[in-house]
Amino acid sequence: MHIETLKVFCDIIESGSFSYAASQNFVTQSAVSQQVRSLEEKYDCRLIERGRAGVKPTPAGQILYTASKEMVRRFMELENRLREIGSVIAGSIRVGTVYSVGLHELPPYLSEFLRNYPAVNVHLEYLRSNKIYEDLIEGKIDLGVVAYPAKRSQIVSIAFRHDELVLVVPPDSTLAKHNKISVGALVGQKFVGYERDIATRKASDRILREYGVKPNYVLEFDNIETIKRAVEIGLGCAIVPRMTVENEVSRGTLKMLEFSEGTFTRPLAIIYKRGRELSPAVRKFIDVLTQSNLLPKVGRGERSARSERMSSVDNTEKAERTA
Image 1 (cartoon, helix red, strand yellow):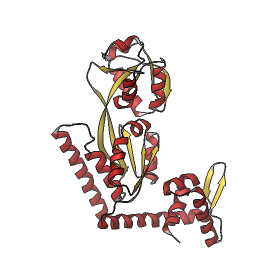
Image 2 (tube, helix red, strand yellow; image 1 turned 90 degrees about the horizontal axis):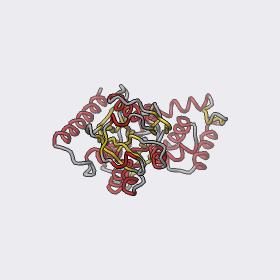
Image 3 (tube, one colour; image 1 turned 120 degrees about the horizontal axis):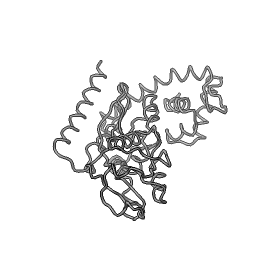
Image 4 (cartoon, rainbow, N blue to C red; image 1 turned 180 degrees about the vertical axis):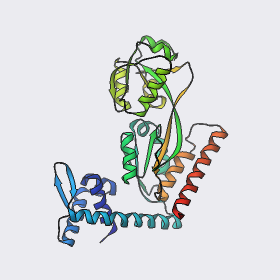
């Protein structure tokens, strides 16, 4: 029996999906089905049941999954250590992120990483923030890149960068004649925003409340692209990360206004499960995100602080491995 087959089986059970397991292992869905049939023929029993709720393990399948999960984990750790010795950066990385970060922040970093490490396959998934944390803990993804990272005992967080929050309005809005605006001047304006449970929405609401503005939300969405389209057609204004609207501002479909009170920022962070053995490819990916020349210019103190955080993470992991 090949360890790759057991990994595919574990991915099916954890995701409840043959197609997801196929994409995670860079094989076709028919190849996944064939591997499951081979396992069932080998043990002469059904391992998986299909139903309206998705794919679930049979009692025999649950026994195989429980044992296989540990074997796959140990095998992956062995591969990672051997690759570190041989200096071969290969394999695959599963990264979960939100739309605003994945579409507008990560592309230049991904390009640089793939240019330097062409043997690595990067699988990028767009997920809600809460699902990113869940999938990290369950081992479905290797890394997450999130805004306003939450403090959780099972999660390690590494500072990535800060976005500037700005106001965007339709170009024919009465507000569009300004380049800057006071937060307090937004009283009575209609807003388009993220859904209430999204961290960027919560942060925007805190800013508005601090300056006495009770926002009137006419529309709420779960992604930045729909928010921008709603503002473009005149349904309201929105507080968004600056980088996400640069294309629309340059094309003239949106007008961007900075806040006269100063710069409000959105922190981004790289997160992964505490105690997990990171592959050489994952470590190199983190290096590109945190040490690349693509980072905005920052002062020596901020770069020093970033280096100290990375050193602290490395030391923590070494301690966990030797504990």
